[in-house]
Length: 192
Image 1 (cartoon, rainbow, N blue to C red):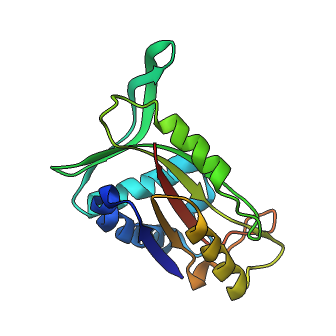
Image 2 (tube, helix red, strand yellow):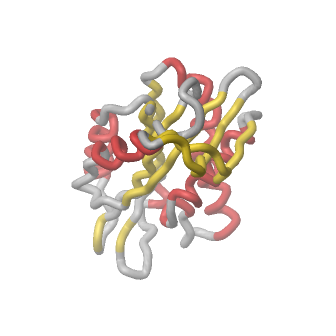
C-alpha cells in the first residue's frame, strides 16, 4: 500500500522525488536483506533516503548544513536538515520522526512543532517545510490490512501540504528485537 497526495501547488515540483522514495526504501531492503528496514532508524536516515530519491529524480540536495536561524532576539547560527532544489525551485526542510502505535498516530502536534522550527530557517522568502516521518508500530503482531487502511485514512485527514506513505506487503512481518512490527513509513510536509 502506497500513496501520495500533494495539496499545496508550490510543492508539486517534489512529486518526482516523492514517487521515487519507495523505490529507494526497496533498494535498501534488497541489498541488505529482508530483516532490514531503513525507516526504523531516525529522521537523518530517512532524510538520506529522501535525498537519494531527489537525486534519482534529477534534483540536487544538501543535507545538514549551517544556516542562519531567525529568532525574536535576532539571527543566530543553526542548521537546515535538507535542501532540495531544481534549476527553478528550492525548498528548505526541518525534519523530525515519531514512532507511534498503529492505532494512535496523532501526527499533528509533532508536525506543527517541526513546521514552527522550519519557519526559523534562513531568509523569509525561502519556501520552508516541516517534515514529519511517521514509522508506526504494533507490539507483538503485524498490523492487519484494516489497521493499515485506518492509518492511511488518518494520514489523509492530517492538515498537511503533502503526504506520502509506503506500507509494502513484504514488510508487514518485519519486527525489531523488542517485538515491535513496523509495517512501513509515512512522511508529512507542512509549510512553515
